[in-house]
Length: 78
Image (cartoon, rainbow, N blue to C red; front, side, top):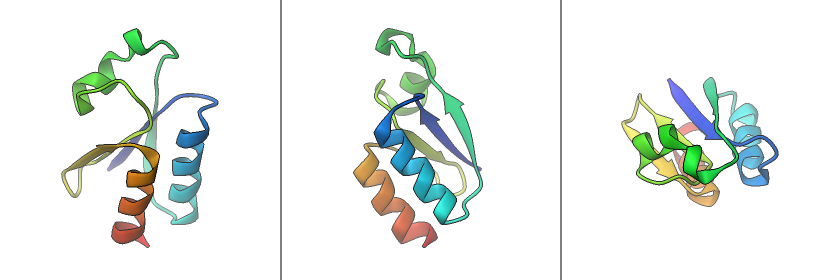
């Protein structure tokens, strides 16, 4: 199972979600709060409060930063 932590209206999150859809990868969206101080779940899984964050349980990968995530998706799922 792959989980994408994202914020509504975040263009970086949308890029990752769009690529997941293009690659036909099943994923679950975890919507986070707008305030950084309220993103405790993201902090718990990734050690920071930025989004997007992808947690890929199948491969044991957790990562942030859209460019890195897109690169990971290309090498893993394309």
